[in-house]
Length: 380
Ligand SMILES: [Zn+2]
Image (cartoon, rainbow, N blue to C red; front, side):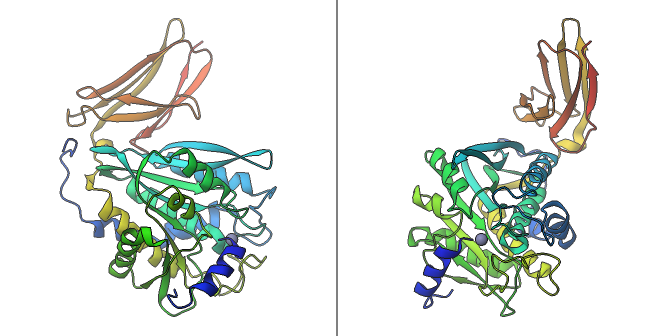
């Protein structure tokens, strides 16, 4: 959240205050995903992955900035997302948003995005915005266990505090994408105790804002209050390119906003339960919107993940399933710590042969995730 802008807007808006695929899976309701939002998983992200303790700094030149970014990337990869660092320039230096893509099985061109900025205002940034980032990571953990008609994209934005620099860079490069809805989770863990959270966006985003608010009201113990235009968070660049987008944020009143005490170590400060409620509401929205098909069962049906090196450095990777149900789908492998490749499944196999490798390599199965150990292969 960006102070100058929110100060302006808050005073101005007091009045509103705030088939193709479908393997074998049984029908799944959005509530099933909502019920998987975990306090323990959320707290682990916020406390142990994002450098949100006293003295930590994810701001410009902050020593914990890059390690936090890398932890987010590793989490996305471990959940089976097609993950990349999206570079952009700010004041002559290159920074990166972390982007994780879960491709839709029926209408992959139709996209939904949930994002949160992971940088801070040179503070530990536990609430602003470790809290929203942990929410996005938790959504990624849950949604990657399921198949959807539409594509889901998870983004941790950088350099929000300097004026939404990372989210503007992403939105401007993706203005021709068919983005059907975007949510920015920004400051969701400070609880004033009145049982509400706020949803903001331009009037053009009203359908999406109302869908978000009703999901919060249905799937969380909170009441969402729908406000108007608010340009201080990462949803705004998406509105500026004509997309439906909304901010979800705690009831305003955090005394540690942009201060050193915005830390998980501050006593009686972070309300994990409240953040989980907001995360539940956001989960409900995307589970309802993106065309939920059912559980991704590929992991259960995986029978082989093999790699070897043939003469001439030809690297062979083979993934085999026990059924033809995934014909036409893809798997993602990491060929060498960051070199992702998507392989088409034909009948029950995905296979590739690549030239010309030397030395030792590690090949990991990224999607479906965590169903096989990485393999080490020696190409001589
Ligand atoms: Zn901020």
